[in-house]
Length: 184
Image (cartoon, rainbow, N blue to C red; front, top):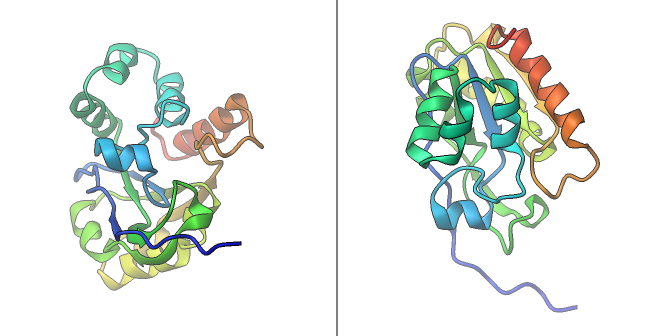
């Protein structure tokens, strides 16, 4: 079997965060389509935006299908933030299993931008394996709530995660949002 061909170093997307963010959703690293389009969860089979739309159906339809800027504003209005665990990596294709030589994002600097942060929800197992590093970075940054920030592993919204149905993913995601007072 041939070794994969070397790739150019990939750089992730900037965070979507605001000072009102209560819950930060962390993926591992954007897929190829998201990188190409410069927007989170751009693959049409990724259920991320559909899950959030199902959680908050009132007024979401137009927002979800319109511009990415409006999607991002809508996300922030729900007191959510989105980022990835990795700032950069080498990878062929879009699978997390193909990530090589990753560099973690600067969570210490993010802590200053999210003073209300109470929870981190990892979108899948690849992201969740870095929960300890994220917690440490928040604590080192002097995040006032770092000791009390809850960490959750959610089923990945990626189309590669066929082990969970949409209904199962939705139930798990809704439970975390309810637990943090973001939805009834």
